Amino acid sequence: MHGEPGSVERVPDRAEVERLVSITPASGRPRSIGFLAAVATFGSLLFGYDTGVIAGALPYMVLPEAAGGLGLNDVEIGLVGGLLAVGAAFGAIYGGWLSDRYGRRHNILLLAAIFFVAAFGCTLAPNVWVLYLFRILLGFAVGGASSTVPNYLAEMAPKRVRGPLVAIDQFMIVGGQLLAYVINAVVVGYKGGPSVVVDHDPSGQFAQGALGAWDLLSHTVGLVVTGGNGETWRWMLVVATLPAVALWIGMRMMPESSRWYAANMHFVEAIGALKRVRSDRDDIADEIDDMVNLHRVETQERWTLRQVLTVGWTRRILVIGLFLGFFDQLTGINTAMYYLPTILHAAGFSSADAILLNVVSGFASLVGSAVGFLLIARFARRQVGIYQEAGISVSLLLLAATFAIGIQPYLATDGTLQGAPGAAPWLVLAIVSVFVFIKQSGTVTWVILAEMFPARIRGTAMGVAIGGLWIMNAIVTFAFPIMVAGIGPVWTYIVFGLINVGALTYYVRVVPETKYSSLESLELHFRRKYSTEEELKEIQVSALTKPSDL
Image 1: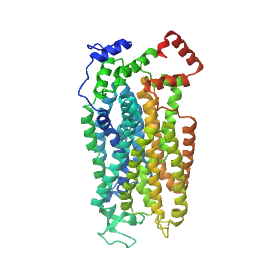
Image 2: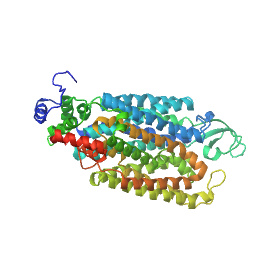
Image 3: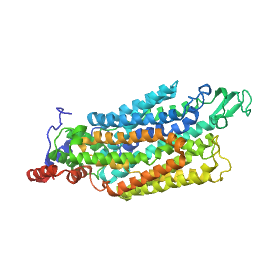
Image 4: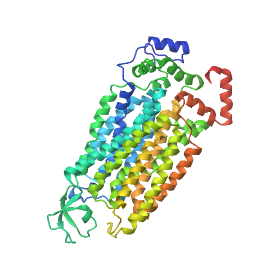
């Protein structure tokens, strides 16, 4: 800290950096970079679990209140998913500001506590309005984690493993989703599919006191129920409290981001933190000197969002980041994550089977995320993004064609399939599984965002970009069930497919490459590339007065 023994309140030269590195001890016990990533990404695991668990919970939430459900309609279903995304947008933006002001580690500890409280609040919610409130709070934690954890990983990772290490974040998100699907399947196996105790059935299918599947009774006019297993969704939600505790305990053992220390002129603390997670093969003096170089060409103060928007080159990369976030959600991935059981039910599976089969797509997603490590390590970021968008576009259009040919012509007025080809529902599951595999194996959005923003605006800019991502998530999540009900799944998936053709074009023409440079070098490169003519003149003047800095 400023004023403490050993702190440096000025920008040191190279000789001073080397001296400080030689005399400064590690700030605590050594932690391998892999262990640090495993602990920090418990926040990403929670992100994945809390967004994925709702897929299995919704079929129980729609049961009548007398059966233990919440009696949700299509709009309320959209709100249960969408409000989490609204909270996440605020969490990403405000969480980014908090992480810039107080530190990445500090913010993750705070988020762990919010995860715990919000998960319990959702579990105990007596009605949908209380559930809305805690879903927003849970979303705040999800959004904060989505903007802070990748930054923390990118800032603590050696350049040689930065891409794969940040990709662990995506792997853990997908792992959290698969964990949610598995827990949902286990709970369904124990509790059974959504069902109600019938008091009066005008259709005559079930006698008084009989247990009836909600799939068969949901369209019955005049149905009266006295009980059911609607409370099952609460068991699915409460599991999220356990990783929240693990995250809080684990982060207590981790150092603060060395680059956050350096950005705030605490170079001694930056060295101490870096020594905890570096091996003998790493040149700490070189790494610290890269951080110091930024202070030689920039003002020292942390920028506000207004400053970011008034400077041409920072405004340009912020806009690029925003559109990366928008397109990440317009892939339609969250329609699969939140509503796959609903999609599979529409394709002809029972609700219970649809929840169980969700594990198949979750496993495909996890395998895809694992393959993503190899792709990100081997190929340029833009190449991986282009592969992702091309594959997603084809998958969504194939899904639209399958519904058009094999599902929609055979839908009866009560929502059941009559005479449809037996392979059609399985083809839907196969295409969705391929879709999520391609999406997760090609996801580079989080990696690029964690790499492209300058140090002095990294938390704030990352928060804004991820906030935009979550706003688009909220729009897609809320609109999807309404679109399916209004224009049908065929046109819904055609719309998403065409949007992703546009995203493919964006990757080809606009997105910059970030793989092959240090974070500090990228910052100087973007400063030159995207500056206005007036800003370029200022850089040239700076280069004349401080030639070694540029």
